[in-house]
Structures are given as structure tokens and as C-alpha cells.
Amino acid sequence: MSNASTMPNHPRSLDFARLHEGGCLVMPNAWDPGSALLLGALGFRAIATTSSGFAWSRGRRDNHVPLEEMLVHLRDIAGAASVPVNADFEDGFATAPDAVALNVRRAVQTGIAGLSIEDSTGDARHPLFEFALAVERVRAARRAIDEGGTPVVLTARSEGFIVGRPDLAETVRRLEAFAEAGADCLYAPGIRTPSEISAVVRAVAPRPVNVLVGGDFTTVAALADLGVRRVSVGGALARVAWAGFLAAAREIAEQGTFGRLSSAVPSAELERAFPDAARRRFP
Image 1 (cartoon, one colour):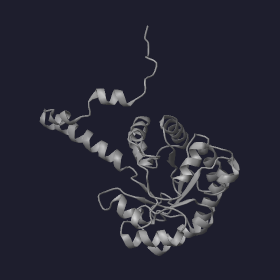
Image 2 (tube, one colour):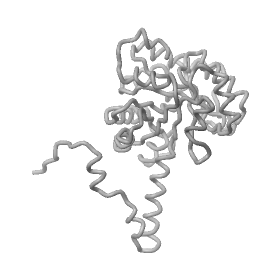
Image 3 (tube, one colour):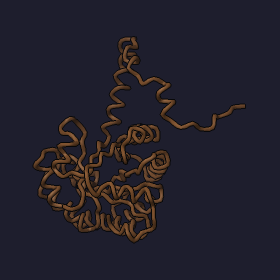
Image 4 (tube, helix red, strand yellow):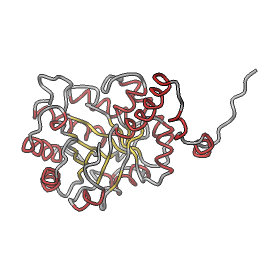
């Protein structure tokens, strides 16, 4: 990873960087401290945040959480997790490269071990930042990380396949440029076929590629065979949790029965999973 050998020793960040050097890292996404703790307890070697999962938990749509709230969230997740945390930092919460750099510096201070910056604008008419600006934004994030002295892994995302611009050649062009600009890991959410994935892996080699799996279309073994070195699930685990919640709540609301509650995780199992804390005392 970029410049890690010249930076001060930050064990969790350095461990996270080493996890990208070989094999295929499965990095599921947590949306609150509880889910972060449970994923670590299941043996995953790293986890990520999910901007969508967090936004939904706050009663908001994805990309509608303000920066200050996101920074608190990252600090909470990094503090709760027992393993390195990669932050879904959306578009850097800014357009201009200098502003992206400033926000990245603040994110790094939350204790995260990795961070992603995407090239989507949120504007349906022009969903991707213009090429040169997108590259400069990645370069600014790289500079901010290096100047901060913490070897945080920088992931650069090209969002064409999930914002209505599924152009593989353009996606590859952007990822190659992001790698040249200093990204440690490359990520094109929405690519699904072996040919698409292989094309991205070849284009940016030897840098690692992250693949998003939001449904049952592949396996870890199949992705590893294609050369993928990191797998995440975005908001999929949060959606699974919401599916169970809504199914049980709808049964109660529509039928007046409680059958789905019988499939709930026992309270005792959850109590055992979380660390003891000082019992709150009330007067």
C-alpha cells in the first residue's frame, strides 16, 4: 500500500493493508456498533461501514447524512469493532479536491483503517464527475492520507454501473487513472459477470480489486478464482435485517398474529455477544 512503510506504526491500518496483499478478503458491512461487534465475533478479519445501511437506521435516504453525523458514526464503529474498519465515505462530502482532502483528514482521525471515495455526483443528469476532476479528487484524498501520517488504505470507486452508465471501457479507464493517482484498491460496484470482473482485475493489476455482492450471483471461491482480493456486501446485510423486521411487523399489523417472532435471535445470545458495561444507575 502507498507509503505505508514510511509512516508511523498504526497496527490496525497496517494489518488492513496486509490483508490486501494476497488471498480474498471478505469484508461485510456493519451499520451500527452492535452489528460491527457481531461481525468481528464471527471471525471476519475486517469490516466496512455502509452509507445506505447507516442512513436507513437514521430514517434517511442514502447520501443524505451530513458530514458531522457521518464522522461521529465512523468513530463509533471504529471504536466498537475488534477488527480494522473500512469507511464508506461516499463522495468525500465535497466536490472540490481541496475540500475532499480536508474531509478525508477528518475521517482518518476517527480511527478507521481504510476509506473509499466515489466518483458519483448525485445529479441524475450528470451522474459521474468529469474525468479529470474525478482523478484529482482521488489524488487529493491520497495526499491528505499521506500528509496525515496514518497509512489508511484508499479505495477509489467508479460508480457508472450503479448510476445508469454501465460502460465497462469508461469504468476501466477511470479505475486505471485512479490507481495512477494513488488509490490502493479499486472498486466498481455493479459489475457482476466474470468477464466484467476479470477485465477490471487485469486492468489495475497488481492493485487489489473490491467486488460488491448484493445478491446470490457468485461465491467467494469463484471471485477468488477471478483474482478478486476483496469482497464487500454494501447495504445487503442491513436489507436482510430490515426484511425480517418488516415481515414480522406486517404480520402483527395485518393479521394480529406473532408467528414470525418465534424466529428471533434469543435475547440471551445477544446479551452474551456484547461486552459488559457499567450498569446505568437511576436515582
